Amino acid sequence: MKDRSAPQDIYEPASPHDLVSFAVVCKPASGADAVELRSRLTLTTLDEYLPSPGVLADVADQLRTLGFEVFDLPGPIVSARGSVERFRSVFRDAELVRRTRTVTNPLSERTSTTSIVIKPESPAPSPEPLRGALLISVQSRPQFVVPRIPPGMANFSLHPPGDIAQFTYASATHRLSTASGRATGEGVSVAVLDSGFAVHPYYTDHGFRITRRAMADTSHAEIDDEPHGTCILASLFACAPDVDAYGLKLGADATLGFRYAMHRPKIRVISVSWVYPLANEVPLPVELVPLQITILLAISKGVTVIAAAGNGPLQSTFPAGMPEVIAVGGVAVGGNDGVTAWDGASSFSSVAFGGRNVPDFCAIASDMWSPVPGTPPDWLSAPGGTSSAAPQVAGIAALLLQKRPELTPAIIRDVLAVTAADVTAGTTASGHRARAGVDLATGAGFVNALEAWLSI
Image 1 (cartoon, rainbow, N blue to C red):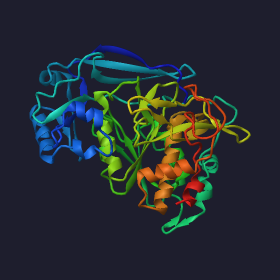
Image 2 (image 1 turned 120 degrees about the vertical axis):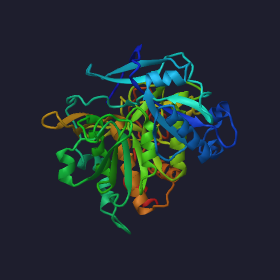
Image 3 (image 1 turned 90 degrees about the vertical axis):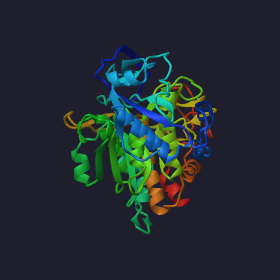
């Protein structure tokens, strides 16, 4: 939903018994230092900055010996967790605090998340205590771009799955055939990394296939009543009703979700509806480097990563600002079927990534009904935001992969951009106005599933 005010942060001393999640970037086999890695890391240079398996194993063993919990998932990063007291005893230069971040939506409703983070303006922990470590990154929770689902805000709301499928031309695509059957995403797995996924009658009654998993650093059950993850799944299934969806509940370390997803059979698409706001930092903050490396590795293995651009007048967001990621903005659909740039969407040119323009293109972000548990009658009408737009594109990507499994993430982005419908009206929350042709407000325009499917 629209978020027109900046997050408000309150910092308090961390308790010695608080748990802190962190990631270790290990020394690359090439011998490159941290400055070079942070300035040159891209999809093409990724192999130069990957450590050897022996270094990864050694760092993990050291952390276990020091009393930390190490999360055993394949990948180029060592992820771990421990008490603040333990962390401070090993990384003595680290100043940890408890940050409570509050986001206020247009209805003055507030949502708060708490993370243990490095004190602002303090240096990152030194890697010196760990042989083979290059960077120590303390992880914080991402900011979900629909903080809470408010009651209805307009007289016109779209209904899933039909309205969303119709306007994106996904429903017209569903009537076509592939070698494996109707073009509905059958046989393609899509991972949605989010806050939690409830069992809702809408999903069970439709027979949608959902595998729910909680990541190792969460303290709650795999199934809960958190509304954000639950409601955005509706947009995925509207565009690809027969995909195998993995609802991955995140803890503090978002890299764990990516590492889990990229090693599950058949997962070809990862959708994220959250952001880390940036303030024109160059290079990318140390905190986000492990996640950047993990995302690049997923893409290098053929996984298409799709990210919401964000809501509100944000200067820049991550991971949508990464050039290798498909960044999705928002359009609004009016009562006369007119499509305009959604006035709650973020749009920007990312300083951290050399002026990369976001979004690449858009999907529906305006008012829609969403399945939200625990709020009778379990449905609410509100803007879906770019949170809902991203999984729509993930579903359309699944339709393309069902037809042509060999498609790469770069080709999928190009196909969706070339076949998008131009949007020439409306202004984003960042103040960018849509105009004829590619623009900063809506990128290439509004995705068209049918045109994309027919073009491959």
